[in-house]
Structures are given as structure tokens and as C-alpha cells.
Amino acid sequence: MTTENIPFTEEPLNGAAPGSAGGTELAGGWGELMRPRYLVSTITLCLGVALFAFNEFFISTALPTAVEELGGASLLSWAFTLYLVFAIIGGLVSANLKQRFGARNTLLAAAVVFIAGTILATFATDMSQVLAGRLLQGAGEGVVAALCYALIPELFPSRLVPKVFGAEAIVWAMAAFSGPLVAGGLTEHFSWRAAFFVSIPAAAIFIILVLAIVPRGVSGSEQASSIPFARLIAAGAGILMISLSGIAGGTLPMAALLTGAAVVLVTVVHLDRRSPNPVLPRAAFTVRKALGTGLWVILLMPLAQAAGSVFLVYSLQHLWHLGPTAAGALSALMAISWSLSAIGVASLRSLALRNRIMLLGPVLLLIGLGAVVIAIALDILWLVLPGQAMIGAGFGISWGTLSQLMMDVSTDDERDRTSAMLPTLQSGGYAIGAAVFGLVANVMGFGTAASVETMRHAMLLVFGSGCVIAAVSVFFAIRTAGLARAQQTV
Image 1 (tube, helix red, strand yellow):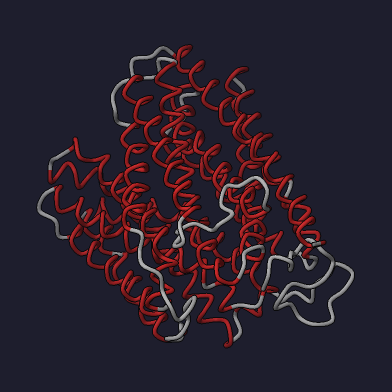
Image 2 (cartoon, helix red, strand yellow; image 1 turned 90 degrees about the horizontal axis):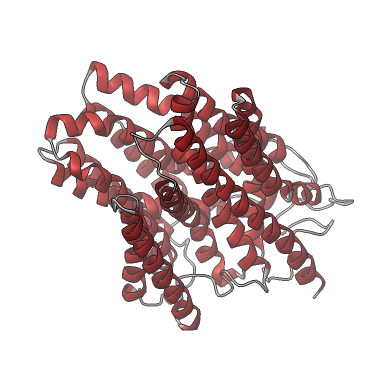
């Protein structure tokens, strides 16, 4: 498919059922995902996403107890940092691995690496072994998550792609609710090792399903390019600097690390764009192509929402004195809203309508973050509720459609790289956002000894900064829609 087949017209997409017209596809229903032809594929891709989602909640819930037993509290943050860095590197290299070894072999190898890391962390006798296990988990899961996106257009017709994204949204919601509950119960009544171990049988089932559904020949091309290790190492170093800035322990070191990371990552993108063997799509982060501006939206929306991911529960507990359960429930409302809105949008038959609604996603994110700012400024707790609902709806109505658009505006030889960028950029956005908002909060005097008013002012600036970033994502979303329409007329 060329870049001229852009899904902003009233015509059906590549792969849509023939005979659609008037902006309404003959879209498949949810039941079609459960038919024998697609059932195993649906379960496999959702399980690949579930490995990433549930493992994140399992580990974050059980790890503090592991630290109490093994010691090494100073290394706690590294368990998350190493996982994130190697997950992003795995995502970046996944397209090349798929091209070189095929999707089947790459997924199997990545799942084995993930299992090896999980076993190492589960039976660790000190924190250094936990860190090594987390590194392997990140590398394996980064590849799995990226290829589960890349395989969507290969395993499903385009009419079912929104349904697949909707199903994955359900998986994320289930992980957000049941993940901490299951991990907490296993940790409390058995051991933190049980919470770690539970990912192993799920990964084993994933391997069996991959063997069943992914053909040996699913790959990008017969001739694979070399792996650009230097650029991957540099990108990993940039992400590591971002992660380390969150634990730098001072405003000046944080700012220095973030500045250095920005220089490294911009240089990597520049060099990659000029390389004959790129890791990123050629149009990544340009402002002249729909793919480039769309990837900016993919990065900026989670970056803006990271304000809530990092600070919302803490704010609810310290500004409004909510307990952990109530604060966690309000925070989880975003995941519920995301899932429900994603299911609703995926059920729409008109592709043109889904694309128009997509533009509202960043707008709702901006309004939702604005509502949280007003709630903090005026001490209105109930306003957090609709704010969280709008933030979740913003992601739900735009994320699946935007992801599908990014795949469709890519050329055939770049679709794997584009697909792999989607979860990778999402993780990168949250990492950058956490670091940036941590710096903002530090500058405002945020800390355990800070007064309520100091904390309130810090949170106002944090969520206000999130609003600014969300506003930029609105601009890029509008430009993406315009560029996609323009490309279609060429």
C-alpha cells in the first residue's frame, strides 16, 4: 500500500469489505474477532499486551516487599529504569529483528528472554539479580509489545483493526484494576516471588499461540539490513539519562541530565534520518508529513498525561487526605474511561467518522487536565472525577484510530518500523513526562516536608505544564488530519 491510500476519505480502506460506500465501511462486528478465523490471533495479540500491562502492575506492587527481604533499597528505582530503557531499545530494534529473522522466530526468542528474566528475578537472592532479571524482562517485552502492534495489519483486515485496539484497551483496563489486587494478594498471602512468577505461565501460553498462528515467513523483506548498534546504544543512553534525572537529587543535576538527554536523542534522530539503514520511519517527527506529526501526537499525549500518572494519587492523598483505596480508584477512572470510549469508537461503522472523532482526543485530554488544575486551585475534589474521565476518553477515542492511521500512511517497507514506534513512543512519552514534571515539582519546592500550600502551587505548575503540552498535541493532531487529507489527493 502506498501513502496515497489514506483513510480520511469516504472510500473503504485496504482490506475493507467491498461494497462500502457513503463513509460507512462494512465493518466487522465484535463477534467476528471470536470466530475461528481470528480468535487465536486476537487472544495471542491481547496476551502479548497483557504480558506488558500485568507485569508492570505485578512488579510495581510486589517489588517494595522484595526490597524489604533482599535489601538494596537504593537500587529500587533501577529496577524500573533498566526495564524501561531496555523495553524502548527492544521496541526500536524489533522491526529489524522481524525483517532479519521473521516475526515468528523473533517473538519466540523475545518471549524466551522475557521468561528467563522473570525466572531470574523470581528466584533472586539479592537485588543485583532482580536488576538483571528486569533488564531481560524489558528487552523481551519491548520486542513483544512492538511486534504485537506490527502484526495487527498482517493478521487482520483493516475493518477489524479498530476492534483489535478496543480489545487491547480492555486488557489494559483489566490490568489497571486486577493487576495490583492480584499482585497484592499473592504478595500478602504467599510471597512477592509468587507475584513475579505468575507471568511465566502466561508467557508459556503466548509461545504456544505464536507457534500456532504466526507463519514462519511473516517478515518485512528477504534482505535484512544490519542492526545499527551505535544509534541504539545512544538512544538507550538518552532514555537512561531521562530516567536518572528523576533520582538525581537536585534541580541542577536533573536539568543537566534532561538537557543532555535532549541533545543525545535529537542527534540520534538526525543521524538516523540520514542513514541508509534507519531505525525510525523516514518521516518520523517531521512537520511536513502526516506520519511525522502523528508520531508527535503519540509522544505528546502520554507525556502530558504523565503529570497525573506520577502525581495524581499523591495529590489526592496529601491535598484532600484521601486514603490509598479512594485515591487509587479515582486514578483508575482514567483507565475505565479509556476502555469504554475505545470500545465505543471501535464499534462505529464509519471510518471517516472515526477519523473526525479522533481529533477530539487531544482536546479532551487538554480539557481534562484543565479540570484537574481548577480542582487543585479552587480545592474542588469532585472536579477531579470528570477531569479523569475526559483524560481517559481523550485517549480512548483517538489512540486506536490514530495508531491505525499511522500504519496506513506508512509505505509497505516502513510499516513495521512505524508499528514498532507506537508502544515505544508511548513508553518514552511517559518516561520523559515523569522526568520533566519531577523537575518542575522540584523547582517549586515539592517534597515530603513541603507545606500544603507549597505542594498545591507545585501541583498547579505540574498540571498546568501538562495542559501546555496537551495543547501542542492538539495542534499536531489538527495538522495530521490536514496532511493526511492532502496526501490522499496527491
